[in-house]
Amino acid sequence: MTVAIIIAVGLVLGTSLFHLSVLRWLSGGASKIPLSGSMRVLLIVLTALAAHIVEIVLYAAAYALSVHTLQLGKFSGVPVDGALDYLYFSIVSYTSLGLGDVFPDGHLRFIAGIEALNGLLLIAWSGAFIYIAMEKVWPWESCSET
Image 1: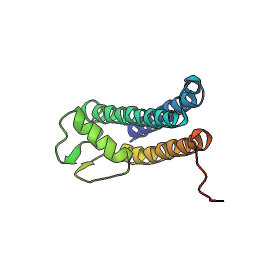
Image 2 (image 1 turned 180 degrees about the vertical axis):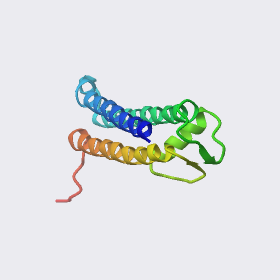
Image 3 (image 1 turned 30 degrees about the vertical axis):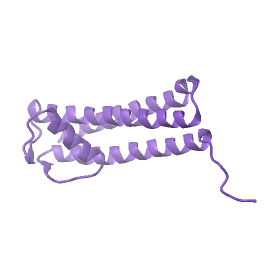
Image 4 (image 1 turned 135 degrees about the vertical axis):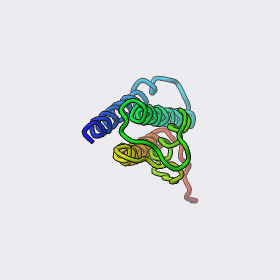
């Protein structure tokens, strides 16, 4: 269990620091790119999506390492045979979708639970960032009539 805790804490720290660096770049370095408000929001949304995909891939790699090398558990349900299967499970966990066709056994359950919590926080962080960016750069038209 100690190894699973270390992996989970490492993944939370790694993905959070990566997410922080992406959002800092979007608010700093990317702001120097000359774009209209709409295109800037699109850049922010697509970059945040790419960051989430990278974070999901990190978790998928950790699952593969945990199963094949560290033998912390296995997956039950639909067979998990390759990289795409680990990626699928990671996406379902990260987004808290939890379909249930693939489920972890052993200490992998702890990592999957932490991934769901971590994904929820990182997705909310991106949502808040996008909202703030839209407040600053989105060209809102008045809805009131005079």
